Image (tube, rainbow, N blue to C red):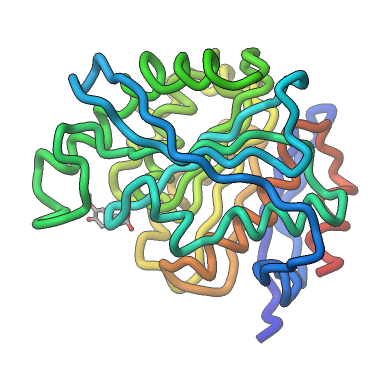
Length: 290
Ligand code: FER
């Protein structure tokens, strides 16, 4: 069970590069157990008008425990996979429980989490042939919907910080590919990037980041994948390219396949790193202590 996992760490910290190290880690057993006695965040469904798609589209929004209109919050956009929609994380990953539990332990910077529908087309349900060309292409079209329609809507409706340093993008599988494609393609918009088990929609490294030096502006570039996941090559080739080009990033390989057990663990770890100065010691401590 407690297999050691290999974490290749390249860090933003004073330009220091740290190579592969072994850690024992995983989220504590009750990290996704609902606890009645702690404060809870709130999940809402929002609807926004999308010029990109020409329809009204839905997203879920999690506001943290103690959320106040008078405060300003950073935002994490958290994307689903090919078989899902805006409810996939909520149904299968219970991010609201994971995050509530982390807040109760004082381990998170208060943030708003937006769960969009990443299939930017009129019929955006995960029904019929989910691998159909138009449905797969809609995951690429979502870049425009996200940047031009959803983010502006969220920034109008919620009290959010609008600087790139206060905006994160992460996702699982197709959403992991979207995260790398959109995040690295729009470094002026996102400073925190987390790709969980990125799918074949991930652009080739040279296309993803033609000018590797641009990635130095990132606060965090996290790539993770289960060691039994057949999509591993897409994460590995991206990490290899970053390493070759001396781009600081975390490449976190964990025991597991292509499933929510892995993605929930990723959210648990990745979310704790967001919107605060990253210290190598903190990461080591976090990964060793669980
Ligand atoms: C593929 C294999 C997997 C693919 C997409 C996926 C578009 C995505 C999986 C997921 O989101 O879980 O060949 O091609």
